Amino acid sequence: MRIAAGDVAALERGVALLGSGGGGDTVTAAVLLRRLLADGRSLTVSPVAELAPSARVVPIGVVGATAAFTEKLPGGDEFASAVAAIERWTGERADALMSIEIGGLNGLLPLVVADQLGLGYVDADLSGRGLPRLDQFSVAATGRGVAPAALAEPGGQVVVLAAGSDVVIERGTRAFLASSGGWAAFALAPIPAGELASCSVTGTTSGALELGRRVLAAGESPARLLLEEALAGSVLARGRVLEVARHVGKGQHGFGRGSVTLADHRDGALLRVEMENEYLLALRDGAPVASTPDVLSVLDHRTGVPVPCDAIRVGVEVDVVRLAAAAFWTDPRRLPVLQPRAYGIDCDPVVAE
Image (cartoon, rainbow, N blue to C red; front, side, top):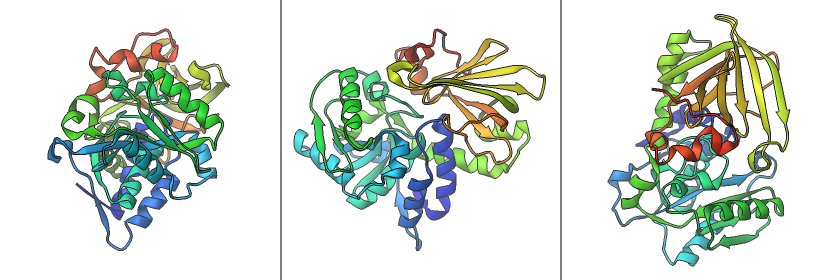
């Protein structure tokens, strides 16, 4: 698959939807990608099945406060430093790159990095949506593990977290970020392409692009059935936001917890959406109707643009929608990693049939 400048708007919309209210602002990464693809250039995204089984694929992305990324832009060497560090530590050269997370910023920026480093790019990621924690990556869910991991921050510091449980690597990463610039380029050990089908979510970049194309083709303020067809999902409610409650530091691992309440214009029912870094659970008149690992997203009703958790406000007319989770996450062996209880919410998962 090739991505050209004309595809950026659709890809940006697709990854924003899959961010589920998180994943970071896509605007800066989209600008960088458009600049790269100017003058008729394009990027090749390779399906996992087309790679040699021995090809070494390095997962990369931005970790930390994505808001800080837009305020403290990269100097240009961070990803090269992180990839070089993980290559030195493992003794293996990268043949290609993939994203750690398709949702949001990391659905776009690794494409730019792959071109800058002269490496191929693989149509897969470690999340299949927006995720807040490293110990929720697919490599953690399958037992492969996150360590070793390399981080390079804008001030020039580079560290390798050589060993430890997935939880320890998550905590070590947060500690490093708190003492540096708030965000860092992140790289994991190379994964043989022949093993990606069992430890990653495949087809996510092409899937995000197709999702974005369908949604953009539906236009602004589409009818409910047209929107559902474009999303291949469901509209849980359409209405005006009545209340936004935020509880900073009250969520799992110190993340901010909150909720959004709106009245459905169709029948007056109240829909409450629980959120942390992402939208996690929807309750209709108090009864759970949708939850993670399905992707819950809140769209501006007029424009169809996804509204992040940190930007939702009272009075906005929105559509609350659900997209089915990647099959990787509905496997009973992996479902506990992303179910509501993984976020400290005492509720069974409610996923699309």
